Length: 466
Ligand code: SF4
Image 1 (cartoon, rainbow, N blue to C red):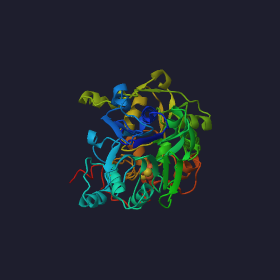
Image 2: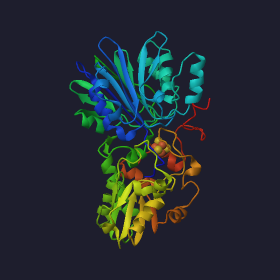
Image 3: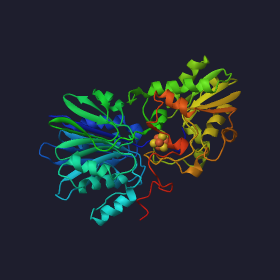
Image 4: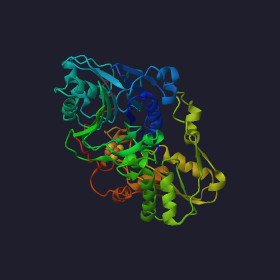
């Protein structure tokens, strides 16, 4: 996967009667770190109804320590790990974000996704007197809920859902309760489970496993789940129009997570098997770009009978530093990220499985890495169909003109990246691999069929050009 496409965010919530829920929340967002590494935060409510919040820039483990966690008292907590998809990466955009309603009550909110009508909604809210302290669509959601008509928070959240267009998996802290909310399309994942007589919810089930919670089920598209002293209470906030993100299975989610009942690892294994059926080739070894394509590489090897061999070692911490490489290091490009195990590569015809090709700027370096290590042939197999359209639903993707497949045929892409052959997994095979051949999944970045009308020029900084 190139550096051109990024995870969205991770959200977490916990109600743990008699406990300080912040500590469990810390480990929840720590497990969701792969979904966002720019900033992190936790908000809690204590038994007296006081709100406590701490946010900071950087990784979860650097934002929190014992002294910053200690004041976050109370049984209710929400947490967030951020990658910016709307609004720059800066402290004022770190989440949870707060909004005050007209009676003076404060809510805190953590959001994964992208709201495509955030700009007009923000204008409307500002006219009503809402004071914004960030440039995110997430704060638009918070103010929309805080100012919504309705006697209960259920009613206010449902009102807001009927105004919002786009992707939002939410963790919301209101006085005396937590809410888990998923948009009617279910773009981004959200699930919930039980822990020590309490309740927890998270973007991905791997966060529940880490803290020893029992997964109950996914929060359904359009569902509003309230959690308080009385237990959990579910209402349908908006008519479901299911379009879950296919890319969660290909790249974003952790392989140990279970999405819609399907283990991500198993889905990736099946993607590799189907790639082998669709694009067989004579080769000596199969390998994969670590780590998101590893399972698919193993699947290709199973189905083709060609042995799987590890050929690259990944430096996991590249891209997680604010220190920019100088030009000489930038020219080395991919070598900073991967080191080739030349003994495994030299003289071999190699099938290389990758999760996707986005801009096509990194892939030639990867192919070059194999060639310099002595590969005789490099056959690239990709777990996704060609990406021809940008995502507007919570994934930071380049604009259309930067996508290599937007204007090129598969053969032209093959030539541009320098591989001996190239095969993209077909959309029907991708759907079959995740075990769902129905239309309940978004495929807009492959087909241009956006489930929600979008403005193509809408960008990450839409709320900053003001
Ligand atoms: S456009 Fe692509 S990345 Fe975005 S939600 Fe749809 S399938 Fe996922």
